[in-house]
Length: 408
Length: 86
Image (cartoon, rainbow over all chains, first blue to last red; front, side):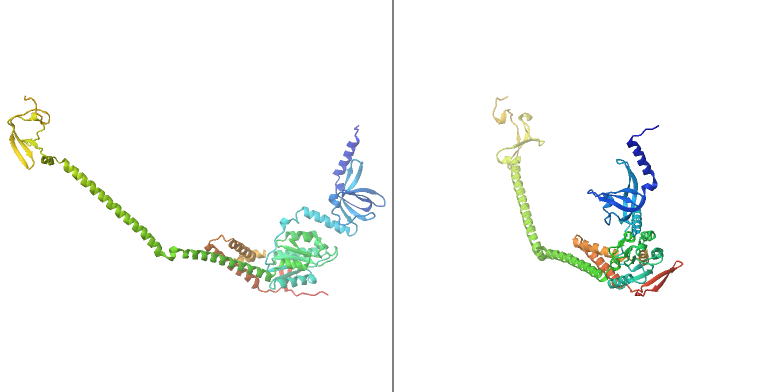
């Protein structure tokens, strides 16, 4: 036989509760007693009827969303789970939702459906379609009679006289209403040519507005390819249609304002844009003109001759310099030539004859350089200044530069 | 859906696109970074777009509002006359 500790057996019981499908999602109808709201924000109370009681706790995370103050004696429905509180060895109801009985049942259905569709992402911002800026045709799903249609027509025509409205009339309350609304949205999506749809009805009780909390209606709006604007009830009424619509209007008039642009405003805006465009392009032109003006005013373009003249002057200067340089070079060369000529003249051997030197050649014309190359009796030619002499060698003596030496 | 159809048949930009483009052009010109040629080109396009936008706003033909109903997948249209309720 197994022996458990208190903790172990309590844990076991707790698990049995946790695996029970009924206990984990349950709605309990009863009367509130011993209601206490702890300073932490958690609420503790007992739910009872004539024969039984159940301890109930609602944590702050949920209790803070309560739209009313629960009080002892109040008949309510609590939605939540039943689980074991191990420390006290007690089971208790952990409330997630708390609504007063009576209208509470619709509210509860609303809350439940809202939670479910929210979890599916039907209300997510990412599904919201932008409204067309300038629709040509607006589809309206509402009652053919009533202030809603009148308000929408009045406001729409005031803002945009040429807008086309197409009404798909439906019942907006009662058994038939949801399917008619669904059908109307489908027809507008498939067979008609509207750019945006307004779905709405006037104010009423929660029961009157109930068709707009119908899951089929909500899903039809979610599935609509054409953007949908909701205008259900008054400002303070929220239906699931409002949550799923691409845009929620507080009133039918506001729906028309959201959907239909004020053409005069829009025209004004476009004209403003065009004026801006003109101003900008004018300033661009002006700036360019100023730039061009500055260039045109520059000296070069104003007095082109000046520009040429100064260039001419510089050119003239260069030409003169060039002329002088070349003259100088020529003169230098000439001088150099003269000097060289003089040098050359000085080196002319014949010029030496003038200074008393003579040239001695033999009969073959060969120059006599050395006394040893001639013999006495040899015929020689002596060239002196102004002529030649034919002579005969008498004797020869060797000696440097004609100095007399001992005879041989 | 209705808009896509319109676009196909007219091969023309819709009002939103025209307005968006116009706003973009105004912004670009405002920045003043364009060359003169580009500025003039943009200006011409902007004026053209603003004309288109204004035309769409002002020259839309008033059509008769309708009440729709459908029978076997066909839409039946009747002129929309406001019925005052009591």
